[in-house]
Image (cartoon, rainbow, N blue to C red; front, side, top):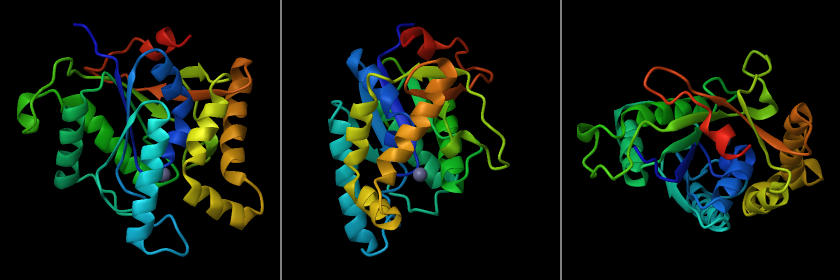
Length: 247
Ligand SMILES: [Zn+2]
C-alpha cells in the first residue's frame, strides 16, 4: 500500500500543537507533507477577561493563522475546555474528521498527561486511528490512502507523567533549524502569550517552549528537539517511520 503524505496533529486546545509538535510538523511540511492541525475545543476558557464567544473566535483565528504559516489547515471539533470526554458524539466527530483528512501519520497527547482534557483527546485520537478507515464507522467516504496511521504521543508538559515520573521517548526529532519558525507559529496565539506575559512579567510563553526543546535536544546532543512515544499496539505499524523520514 502506498501511504499518503498527510499528517494530522489531533490535540485538545489551540496552541497545544504549537507547543508540542510544531517543529516536527514544520519539517514534514518542508518535505512536502500536507499538514492538518485539529483541536477538540476553540479554547473558550483561555482568558481571564473575555467571554467564551469572543475568546473562542479569537483563538480559532490564531490557530488558523498558525497552521497557514506552513500551508496547513486548522480544524476544530467545537467541544468545550474542561469538558472533553470520550463519548459517542465526540467519537463520531473525531471519526468524521479523520475520515475527511485520511492521515497516515497522527500526533496526539500522551495517554498519561497532567490535564484530563489531554488524556481524553489522546483516547479519541487512538480510537479514530484504529477504526477511521472502517467503512461503517462514518458517513463520509473512505478516501484513498485511508489506513491505520503511524501514531505518536507528544510529550506531556515537563515530560513527566501525573506521578512525576519522566517519560522516556522512543523517537526524537531534531528541530534545531525549525525552532524559530516554531516560535513564530506559537506567537500567533497572541491571546495566550499576552496573558502569560502579564502574569509572569516576561515572555514565558515562548521561553517555556524553548526550554523544553533545549532539554530534549540535550538528550541527543543537538540544540533543540521534540520527543515522542510511538504507539505500537496490535494492528498499528510498528516500524519507526518518523525516525526514518526525519533522521
Ligand atoms: Zn492543552
